[in-house]
Image 1 (cartoon, rainbow, N blue to C red):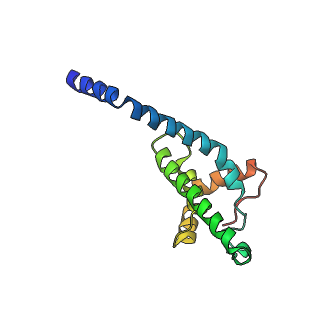
Image 2: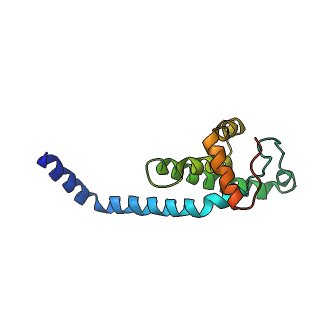
Image 3: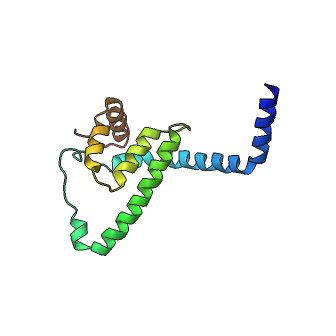
Length: 140
């Protein structure tokens, strides 16, 4: 047993800088999540899961729409990765993944979102966050 602890402590010493940066990145993602989740949840239209509306922005400004889609998808992917990390680290992992999924574009997105929001604990928590932002609850 003593040999295992000695080897473990040696590995920690060898990878000290990696462990530090992993902790720093985890902490930054945690802080970003805490600051942004409430705001992002409040941006979801209350009838998002009832009415699917086509984008007017896409037809009027196609180049700006493309740039905004690239930025939105990058933010969404970062949130998904952060949410996956938060499943094992401190933070609101499932909700961060949900927000990331909503921000990203992919085939079958609407179906997955509806299945995810149908989980009672997820809907309850999202509506609680919306209430704190003075937004009406999501209609499912």
